[in-house]
Length: 263
Image (cartoon, rainbow, N blue to C red):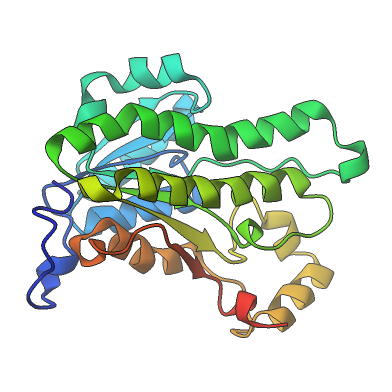
């Protein structure tokens, strides 16, 4: 179980953060932040189930983590399609202790000219998928007496900027979906929290990281004075997935170098 009896631990021991004996499903984990978090949970002892829509990318990620000594499986499915989720997960859907809803996309455009399909695709992948995958997995958590749900939120759950209205709407919705999950299932020992990265060097932000304007903007606005690295999310993810966070529910944990604290 992801959190045992739910009783507060007596002491802060290393086992408090151990994920040994727990099975974690991470959506969109064939690359980027999802793959990085998978490796981090694996180091903490979790058995891993990776998901991606791209079969070749998924197979490569599974092979990579297996070569590093982790127990890992792959499940290819479209996170926006309930039938595919159910078919791909099968019985294992009822055996997930930790779910990280990480899948996400960007479709940037000015709001006044944004195409409907660009709007809908981002909401489907970044918001509705968390509902669909969680709906498939949470009955098993409830039946077995506990579980952890971590939704990948964003700075844009709180703030926006031009050309990302669809992304900000989706991530703002994901913040409130996270809190709704916490309210629904907190009394049954399932904790739902959000992990919200700041500006990280990833494939999704690649263009921005080599643009001198954005480099200056991000580094001068962030008190840490730099971009974040995906590996800097691992500690927060392991914490939220572990027994150390058994009384942490409905929270959004920002890992942003202090950006939201600054004007």
